[in-house]
Amino acid sequence: MEERLQKFLNRAGVASRRKAEKFISAGEVLVNGKKARLGIKVDPEVDEVKVFGKVVKSPEKFLYIAFNKPLGCVTSRKSQEGKQTVYHFLPRSLKDKVWTVGRLDFNTEGLLILTNDGELTQRMTHPSFDHEKEYEAVAHAAPTESQISKLEQGVRLGNEKTRPCKVKANNKKVFITLQEGKYRQVRRMFSVVGLELIRLKRVRMGDYELPKNLKPGEHLYITKEELGV
Image (spheres, one colour):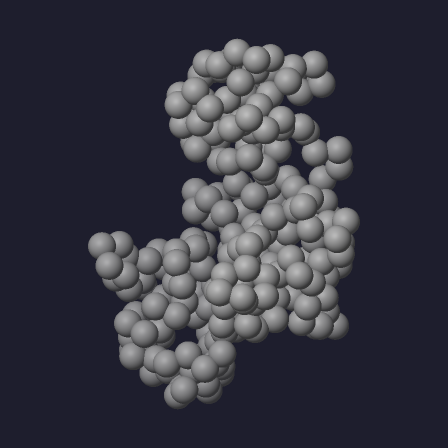
């Protein structure tokens, strides 16, 4: 079945549709040996598509994996300064088949979704789709009503203001639910209102909650429907 080239590249996990369009415009995408043009359609079962000289194929089967990221590892595929990556915990048969939906920094633990579904990745990470991400934070002190209100209304991070969010506090434990994913956002938001984070853990993405019996470093297969996307 034919589909737009940029949609196919996104579905195959090559890039977002916008970035795929840039690759096409730059002449880095070949279809049957010829430079592709924006707007063309391809049939992945018939046409040969290459990006940067590498053949792109449709995933044979979409995989959806919930992973409990431990502290002290990175979400990039390649190790940085000898640090362990989340892919170290996956079986060899999976390592090159899936990627992470978004990221968690070195000192943040909890739920990561891994998949080979490019369209789902786009839907779960682009802020226009409003998918929620919930974090459990432990602060050095219980937040005041004023601090909670500031977090809920949004704070300024550099030249941007964060979107309104949900915050629930129980003494030093704070649950914060976002619909966006800026770089180290929760830590930076807490810092702006004068709260120091001791621990940060993601406990939900979309409709899917981190299972209480899934230990750090463990993974399990889930369905797309469980994510609510």
